[in-house]
Every structure is written in structure tokens, then in C-alpha cells.
Length: 193
Image (tube, rainbow, N blue to C red; front, side, top):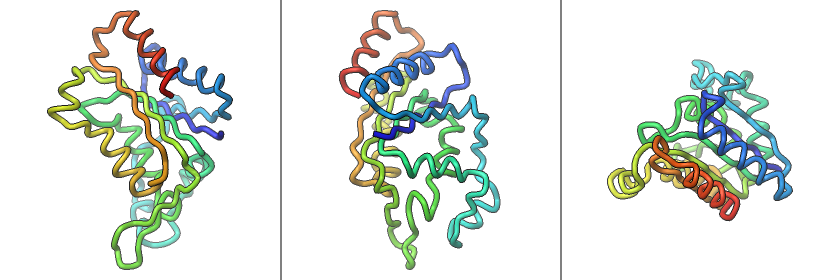
């Protein structure tokens, strides 16, 4: 299966990069054909340009700066996202990747009457997510009601690839983890992803 792995963390020695390395190795062992996209290493520009935004409702979408990124997304059968959850949201660079790459005419199409959009990522069969949070699990689940999960599963996949399977693993209280807890989470990745 053709798999696009998108990593969004600025520090090479971070927990996220360690989890990314372990996840990539696991996916290789599972026989996935991998394309690795490290947004920070590639210096991906997350800022939606004026011409891109102006073309959102005027076909075709101005994809000059993100053409290769869009092609990577459109050719992926599996998408794996690895990132820290900051303030119960995405790192800006990952949010910008969604804004610029999950674009009209590619990830979805606008309805002619501006009604519900029509999905365009029929190629995408699965999305797998590995994220870290500084907060305890109960804050994410009970107080904030898992906002990152909702955006990924309901907004992005719901609009662009509704038949896509979704799995998300969250590592909570990431600032005070023991080696044993990290190792247990890596085992969980290998079992569930």
C-alpha cells in the first residue's frame, strides 16, 4: 500500500521524532511503500497565498507552489500523521499543510450551489495518527471532547474521504513520561497501527 507519512515537529531530538522513527520502521516491516514528508525539514510554507485563496472558488485551484504535495496526497492509499498536539490543536505548519494541500479540485469539489462539498480523495483508504499531548487524557476527552480527533475524522475525512478508515493513538502527559511508558506506547503503535 502506498503510504504518505507526514511529520510535524521542529526538533530532531523530540519525542515525536522518536515515535515517527519507530512508526516508520513498523510500517516498513508491514510492507508499506513509504513517502516520508517532514514538514519542518522541508521548510514547508504553511501560509495560504493570496492567489491560492482567490482560486478556491474559481477553477482551477492555483496549485503552482504545492503541486507535488497535492500529487503525494492524491496518490496515497494510507496517510500517517505524526505530530504534537499544542493547545489542543495542530502545529501551525500541519494546519497550513491541510489548508494548502487539501485543496478544491483535488481533495474535494465545491457544489455548484455552495452546498455540501463533494469528496475527492477516493484513493485514501486509511488514516493513522500518532500524537503527543502534555495534558492528562481526561482533559482531552472529557473537557475538550477530543478536538483534534474531531477535525481529522469528521471535518477532513468526513468531507474528503468518508470511506477512509481512521485510527488515532494519543500519548498523554508527554512531558513527564518514563522510558517504560514510551516503550509501552511504541508497542501499542506496533499492535494497533
